[in-house]
Length: 305
Ligand SMILES: NC(=O)C1=CN([C@@H]2O[C@H](COP(=O)(O)OP(=O)(O)OC[C@H]3O[C@@H](n4cnc5c(N)ncnc54)[C@H](OP(=O)(O)O)[C@@H]3O)[C@@H](O)[C@H]2O)C=CC1
Ligand SMILES: C[C@H](CCC(=O)NCCS(=O)(=O)O)[C@H]1CC[C@H]2[C@@H]3C(=O)C[C@@H]4C[C@H](O)CC[C@]4(C)[C@H]3CC[C@]12C
Image 1 (cartoon, rainbow, N blue to C red):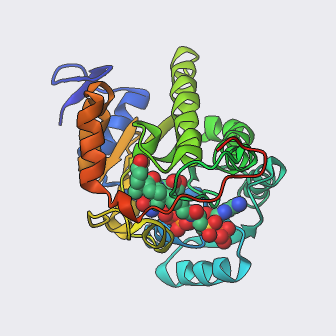
Image 2 (tube, rainbow, N blue to C red; image 1 turned 30 degrees about the horizontal axis):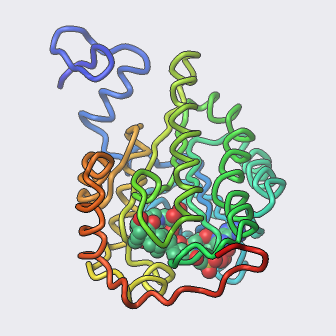
């Protein structure tokens, strides 16, 4: 067993103490699934896709889960399956994250039923499109409410409980929140906003010695129904599996990692594409997308597009 002796390095001399010991224990013995038994976890966007799969993994680990999305019928089915899979408890709250008031209501429910919180997994996204930007600024404003401001509202409401438990904030983002690419302008803006806000907040936590971890999950193309329906006619490469993706998100949060890159191939663009010559990047996009299949949408009312 290596002993953690400071930011980023391990030594065999200094014994671990306090928080450092927990990190050592996490890295050296207990696997994440055992670390989440009995833990109290909120998962947003849990009625389908990656969020649904995270709910099932957490259930198998014996966690308490509070799930949220808009579609009550879907949430009921996910909760039932979570109980069958061994969740310590499973409940849902249905509503739209277009309203930050609902976001705060979800956290209040966790306080009411559990009296505390160990992990907050922010995962939901509002409906968007994979196409040229059509000038619809109102769509961007609405998506900022759903994909960004609701994450901030939940984080702010949950922070006292997370400080108490020395818990985790897991923010599900995308390669399009690190590297610009075409056809996702509104969605990408919300993901870049998450990067800026939560990376800055993590600095403040370190300065103020707030022992709450923030894990940013940088995901590539994942085989969820909505994503495949939206882009499979354009993006050539095969998407990664949502089940494994969900497990890696939970693992990275439980191990208090700063970032998860899944699939691993997403690391390359974030390290290289920022500085690559535009013509190389254009070529990369063209090689990965059937751009000819994109049909430009009608311009939004009053836009110059
Ligand atoms: N799939 C992919 O290729 C990639 C996904 N990601 C990220 O992973 C996360 C999950 O994506 P994915 O599983 O594909 O998404 P899905 O579209 O499969 O699921 C979206 C979830 O959000 C919920 N949701 C949608 N609108 C709202 C709303 N207004 N208020 C509250 N909940 C809402 C949906 O449930 P309901 O409709 O019942 O409300 C659903 O549970 C997102 O943050 C996404 O950016 C990142 C990179 C790639
Ligand atoms: C277009 C997708 C959003 C689909 C959507 O509207 N979901 C909610 C539906 S609901 O309201 O009915 O619940 C995009 C979601 C994830 C995007 C993909 C991603 O983030 C990874 C890549 C990033 C890259 O910059 C472009 C290609 C991506 C595969 C990207 C494509 C668009 C999404 C699938």
